[in-house]
Image (cartoon, rainbow, N blue to C red):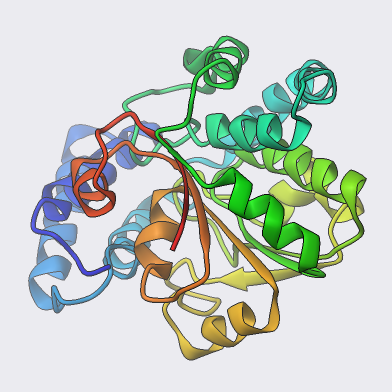
Length: 284
């Protein structure tokens, strides 16, 4: 998915928000925004949104380090506190797999790049999970997912955000309770916004659930989502799951992927053909 012009002001908003997370003064915030503008003017705009986002957040990290490091840790801790209740909700439902899919999609609300929140406690996570579980999905390809699980043996799972990955863990555990799969879990190779890294995955216990970790770029280390190498990963696995908007943007050139996300952006909404706020489980 190529960049839309609406992405440019969104990048500026993300940079400003990150600089405020660092509690920088107004002069430092202005310096970051001016540098981000200069970098964006030099870059080609025919890239994917994640590729340009990497450039923007590299500027932020130069001044702030990892501005979301502490809130990522707290997001993981809060989601882990909810883990027993959410897991019980899944296990006691009439269709545990579909409920676990909804739970994983609900977790995608924990997105400090796209949602205007300043702390994880503002998301009212348990209430939101219950709400999504009791709603119909706007796009629901769960039956096809069940069919693919019957014949598949390996899963490639592209994670999105810290905290959210606790709900991804519940989905993976639910899948593994039905049938044994080789699971490869993909996280960011380094910090960018509140995206999950290997440290987050270990904090929430995913290293005890999945078989292998792989790493995509944060703009400094790792491979780009739209690279031939990632294409080979996709070909090597029977079932591919992509969480969140950034992965949708970066992986949409490939086929055979289940996209699970909350639609928070009008550009993504138009691309999929749904409204902002939709909960989507889409196979392309």
